[in-house]
Amino acid sequence: MILCVSLLMMPLSFALVSTASISQRCHLPKVTNELDAEKLIGTTWYAGLQTNDIAASMISCARFNNFTSTNSSFGILLTEHGVRFVQFGVHFNNDGNGTYLLSKSDRKHNHAKHESEMNAMDRKAVLDMDNFFDNGDHVFLTDYENYFAIFICPPNGVAGKGHRLVWGCFSNPTPTLSQVAAFINVLHEVGISANFHASTCSETNWLSIEK
Image 1 (cartoon, rainbow, N blue to C red):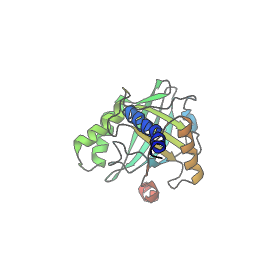
Image 2: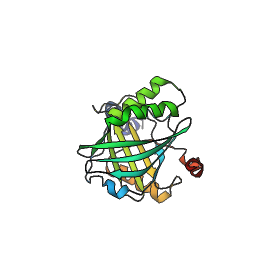
Image 3: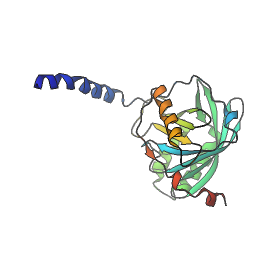
Image 4: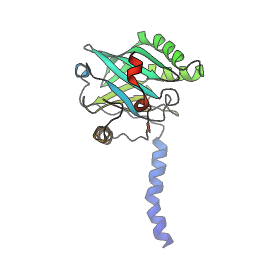
């Protein structure tokens, strides 16, 4: 009986060792369909599910709207909540193969906004987060209806603690089960596995922010 249990446990043990050996690699999904940013114009997306990443302790909610589009880039108005809410524009440039980079011209302004948002929290932590955003490779997947998924990995593909971001954003701050299922299903399709926690977007009075 002990031998049988041992044999049964061997594949599990091997799987755990194998997973641990590749846990420092950050994999972005392979993009088969290029993002059509024009289809995002007029849409709004709220972060609903977040990984325990470098931004998790500082950004509890984010909204993406006011999309603009050019041939090789797109822009958004980003509303974030840390200690307080802030809004600022962000632009992403297509780097080829479905990956995007944050526009260099935005980086200084974005960092100033994040420092304001965090209300003088640990400045090194904010700087580390912004360096991750500034230099990371971004991939966006969406069905333009149910989910807008964001993936960020360091440029060298090697992820230290927290340096792997996967966010599931939805067209409503309180997404339906169908919308969440569509997001989870696409993760399976592209071979991405992650643990999530809920954002605070569903607890936010968005009407008060617009005033």
